Image (cartoon, rainbow, N blue to C red):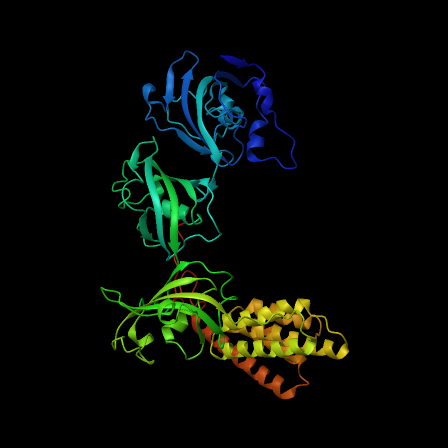
Length: 562
């Protein structure tokens, strides 16, 4: 047994700009309060640090060797090791300072004065009545393992240790369909369910088909990732993976995330469903096809019946060449609605009801009237925004007008997010445009200002008043008297209920008498409506005598329980 007599000197508080709570706890520690003796050497070259999860067995003895408490079965424990996160779990000072000196597999004896264990003033860890917390104690620690973990829940009830990195960046979320190999072990290492039983487990994210803690951990995993997810009992719910949870303290889920697909309820009523079965390239909605795009797709159409009869396949019926189709009014409505949500390279499986399939569109002869269909669609590519490299200023501005026109059509159709994406795309490309003279500079500036104001209009329709104001400010910073920008910012202020700011903006465009007059009349009406609603809402609230409770015309909210 190797004894480190100077062990306590390793834990003198280090000077920092601001002491942590643990550093403050160490200030009253006297030399010799914590001593260590190595009983069995560990392996490796690293020791645990803050943020690491540590798993260890612990036996506490008095100076006479009497066992006070133990996790080991042979000493009366449940044989379930302790699992904590350094720097996050509340721990006694002796272990907080001692465990970081240990190597994996090491067994050490720590001799602790009361101020280093549960006898510390304001100790953050409680013990049962009768525990000898005022005595010097010996803690025998076996460090089983330590590793970096991701904290999933703030109370440390769900943690994840990555054993093999996955691919990509996307993680499953509601309502994705998920396939994963899962094995389940109890805290003492006993197998509850092995991954060798049958096929990968299939479930729908967000449907409570797996324990809550497991789903929380899976929600941080990427495709192909392998991990151990540690879940305590408050995050366990009964399911086919764990039929009974009453007597389980914690569970280790060993998980390999095989696959997940995005499931989108396009209509919101469960009839038109898009399942993504292969990822695309780009960012939604910026890189999705819009109106008047020329699509290049492969697709296979099937009847949604027991036989899944294929009625058309571009790889067979179109001589394996991709199907080029203009976006508007050339494909069934359900087909178009789903492709609008796809990225280049994406493959999706779409189930479609008859009224969005071929009931309002020329049906193939082999598709019965009223039939539900399923399409397997691969979006190969589509006609994208022109590359401005090599174009002169006039050609660029012509393309800007075309793109802006597409955005304007989307805006009129109420598709404000997609319209904004079109305007934003041009604004980003404008960063690489250099007008050659004053005339081009003015045209360029006017076009850019108009695009910012179109973005502001989109935000206003989307209820994002603050962002609408910020977009207007980009124009007003360069031209503080820009009439359209003042008017639109005033409308945003008015919609947000900031009537004084709105009035200031409308008054600044007073030289545009008709516009200003109409805006100020609308503002006055909005103010009057607001005050009328307020008076109605709080009518009688202050009309009662002292001690009485007024019945105000407002909803009563209970104070949150947390």
